[in-house]
Length: 251
Ligand SMILES: NC(=O)c1ccc[n+]([C@@H]2O[C@H](COP(=O)([O-])OP(=O)(O)OC[C@H]3O[C@@H](n4cnc5c(N)ncnc54)[C@H](OP(=O)(O)O)[C@@H]3O)[C@@H](O)[C@H]2O)c1
Image (cartoon, helix red, strand yellow):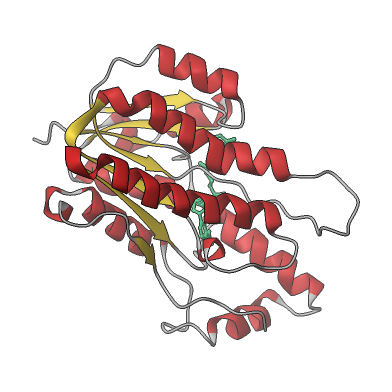
């Protein structure tokens, strides 16, 4: 039996859900968040949640007041935090329309910062922090300035926190997937395929060409890496940004 508690944000689907299932199998105790009550209650109904030591909370990390009240009630020692929750919204710098900058930065960057700062007293020494970033934390893509800013920023924070917390035995790493087969990955690809006047299948083949594996990463592959970085065995690895495949350049 593993007595370690891990907080995973954005665990209702995609990468976060896969990480949660994998860690539950490894007998970690989990605290999972989703953005709202509906997705939280759907997650609570899943069998791996019911059959393991897993708590689920709704926490909209775009909302600083919600983060404050979530933290106020916190009384649990933690072995690790996985900052996975994220959104991707686009708008060209020359374009009019709803500007996603505040929403994306609050959710993807300010949220992890506030949660880490306030939960740090509850993090064990040694302990682990894993930030899910992106290949778009390494390169720019037209119309993705809000998302890129959030992911470049989270990689920067990873390196700062590693330097500040290393002496206490807390490791901090970033995992930067390229394309992953999730709702976010598919929506993104379909939108770009449509703009390019191609079918999703044609576009998928094209964007996979420069990738070493010639395919998207699976959620399991991302979860495997996260699971290792959270383990005792990863005690000597910190301040690194684990880019999972090559950077995808504009076609
Ligand atoms: N998929 C990719 O190709 C890819 C590539 C690189 C990096 N990433 C990163 O990997 C992480 C997970 O992505 P994914 O593909 O699994 O995305 P996803 O399928 O869209 O799932 C996103 C998760 O984040 C949660 N979330 C969204 N807004 C939130 C908010 N305001 N407060 C709290 N939770 C919120 C969602 O909860 P609800 O269900 O409640 O909305 C959901 O659990 C993200 O940080 C993303 O940027 C993804």
